[in-house]
Image (cartoon, rainbow, N blue to C red):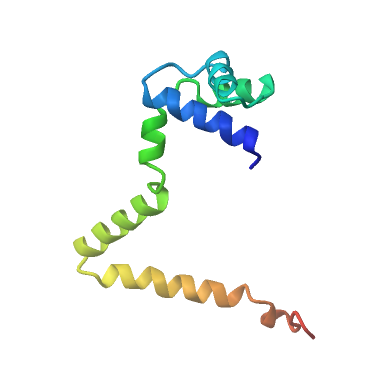
Length: 111
């Protein structure tokens, strides 16, 4: 990422930290105060991308997502079924992976 883009991002983070609405004009003002010239398009794109979003929430939820929720659901399902049901889907997935391999077609990658 170029220094100009980083400067615009840091300006947006400063605005979010102070609880100020993130706009292209404010990003440009902050970067100008830091003696960094940012093309107006970068400030506008960043402001539009962050429009209506809580930047602090975005930063605090960086690692959270569907895989974590899926893991929790799988753990809950396995605990409810005594753990036996959780092992059965894993075995089925392994069998499906074997069916899709190139070895079954009679040739390999390096043949």
